[in-house]
Amino acid sequence: MESWAARTPRKFRFLVKLHKQTTHERDNEAREIDELLECLAPLRETSPPKLAGLLAQFPASFHASAENEGYLSILAERCEGIPVFFEFRHRSWDNERAVELCARLHAGWVAVDLPPIRSLPAPRPAVTVNRGYVRLHGRNAKTWYDQDAGDRYDWDYSERQLRQWLPRLAALESRSEETFLFFNNCYMGQAVKNALLMKEILQRQFEVV
Image (tube, rainbow, N blue to C red; front, side, top):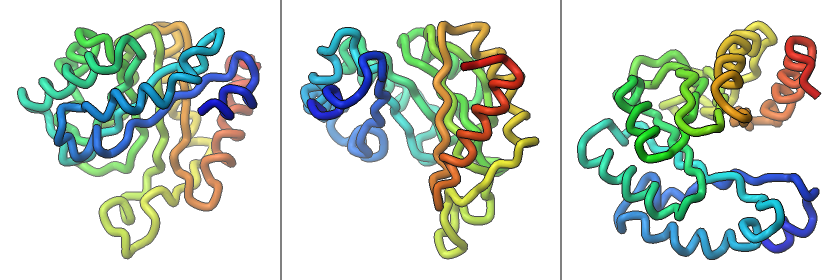
């Protein structure tokens, strides 16, 4: 972490994904967060701080329930004021109630691009803090739940598919100070390829530098 802080430009920022102990196993009320925050101290103590937030990506087995809402509350509290963004992988969270819950907890909402599978959430461009957050994972329905069929994130977005996000990104940007956009279709470098294509599209559409 000290090396990252030293080698990156002054205004470079990191968004750190939480470990599966926190999001998938959830066996100790998120106490491992304390250890992570200690490790992240070099990124938090720069001026300006290079730690922009934390990503909590929950598995498809994490359904909307009173118990899980309680866990989200514990997690948000343990993050000590650092913005935490919740990414849900089950459709039971894809509603305004969940968006309002994130807002009450001062947690960010992650808008996702996922395969068209009934159990997965739709891309909901919500903003619950002052930042928008988007993750594009690809739309490979064939491999999403079948590892034998190939890599889950093996997807190459077309320009048409990326352009489908333009109105959503415009909505996010209008309701936030800034919007983070990540590509996670990382198989064979496709995330880099698609990120560069999206950059070109945004430059043409919005004159983004």
